[in-house]
Length: 420
Ligand SMILES: *[C@@H]1O[C@H](CO)[C@@H](O)[C@H](O)[C@H]1NC(C)=O
Ligand SMILES: *[C@@H]1O[C@H](CO)[C@@H](O)[C@H](O)[C@H]1NC(C)=O
Ligand SMILES: *[C@@H]1O[C@H](CO)[C@@H](O)[C@H](O)[C@H]1NC(C)=O
Ligand SMILES: *[C@@H]1O[C@H](CO)[C@@H](O)[C@H](O)[C@H]1NC(C)=O
Ligand SMILES: *[C@@H]1O[C@H](CO)[C@@H](O)[C@H](O)[C@H]1NC(C)=O
Ligand SMILES: *[C@@H]1O[C@H](CO)[C@@H](O)[C@H](O)[C@H]1NC(C)=O
Ligand SMILES: *[C@@H]1O[C@H](CO)[C@@H](O)[C@H](O)[C@H]1NC(C)=O
Ligand SMILES: *[C@@H]1O[C@H](CO)[C@@H](O)[C@H](O)[C@H]1NC(C)=O
Image (cartoon, rainbow, N blue to C red; front, side):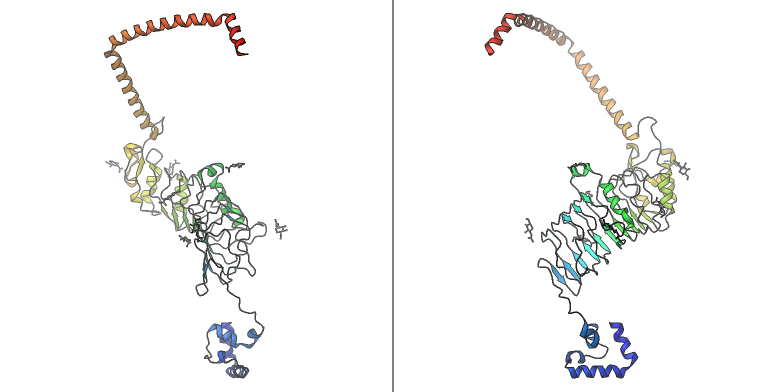
């Protein structure tokens, strides 16, 4: 409408004045009191056609538990103990904060409205005790760009949560940012099912997240990253895997993530990066990798990584990386190691090696002390043995006697009779 308005004067000033005169005559005083370069809201009213046939302005209601700002196009329903998504969300909403409630389940089409919430771009659902997100939960949100599902104990995330319930026809979501931090299912339910597999399935279903630029998966106790978890996210620029329990990246492929700019792997359980991973990271043109706070094991598997670290510009703060194991290498800076420092015990892994040596020493000490005590008490022990032998003999004789009595068939009959 502003376009039509600016074209008006260019086409013919006279005609516009004529129209305005007609409006004055019709009593549209409010619209004519403003100058010709009017602001958008009043200029639409000054154009006769849309004013006559246009729909009445939408009511812009605000659901009672929420706070709405039409100017900021923001609706906040925060910490209200809501158990479902409010039905009457105002259609202008662009940013929806639905946080700190008790939604528990997000069904299919939870945000489908008539008319659709076409402008909803940022949806924050963090801290809602969500356990289940169904297929197509975010259907009919064509403008959705940012979604935050963090801080929810998700045990049932549908593979089609982001892609729509009808996977064969669902237009790919245009999500750009997806936050899945601290999805903390209770430990018991987590053991039953692979949390990693569940998340990976939702990330690759139906190529729905091809446009994703940012993915945060921090603090999820991830033990591994499924092989193809990232295969359908070719647009990824920022991947945050901080504060998980990743032990190895050997089976993960970063090769297709050619736009990757940052890869956060701090606070995991990484022991070493192998040649394959090193080559993949090196091949990504823009990436910066963050590797702090991992328990690097400085043994015979480490030289490739050390050599790479010395060369590469990819790792941020590479001088801060230190060995955690084996004991003799602890706190040594990775960059300052040379291959003569790095060896393996041929039989035992080095972390076990130290503990076995320690265990051996302790056992030997205990044995020595035991022998010493025996030796010093040899006279007392002899006496004690005699006493024991005598006591045993007495006891055995008594036992023998009782056994004979018990074995007497008459007595056993007697006792069984007395039971009846
Ligand atoms: C939500 O529930 C909690 C606990 O039942 C209560 O303390 C709190 O006042 C409730 N908040 C609202 C906004 O009703
Ligand atoms: C969503 O809301 C939570 C709680 O208010 C906040 O910590 C988080 O930063 C928000 N997420 C985004 C993407 O803004
Ligand atoms: C998915 O969409 C196709 C084409 O519109 C339709 O034939 C099919 O029945 C739909 N499937 C489901 C499960 O709705
Ligand atoms: C564990 O999984 C089995 C089969 O998948 C299911 O029947 C059972 O209810 C699950 N247990 C829990 C505690 O979720
Ligand atoms: C790391 O994750 C655990 C849960 O997975 C959480 O309890 C802890 O607060 C997180 N630590 C940081 C520094 O975020
Ligand atoms: C990389 O992308 C190609 C083409 O898109 C695909 O065929 C291949 O499976 C992907 N590789 C990995 C490891 O994801
Ligand atoms: C890793 O690559 C380097 C050079 O690219 C090579 O010298 C080394 O043998 C490789 N290590 C393994 C374990 O294959
Ligand atoms: C390896 O380390 C030792 C001492 O730790 C040092 O004397 C030696 O020069 C180093 N070798 C190389 C090739 O850097």
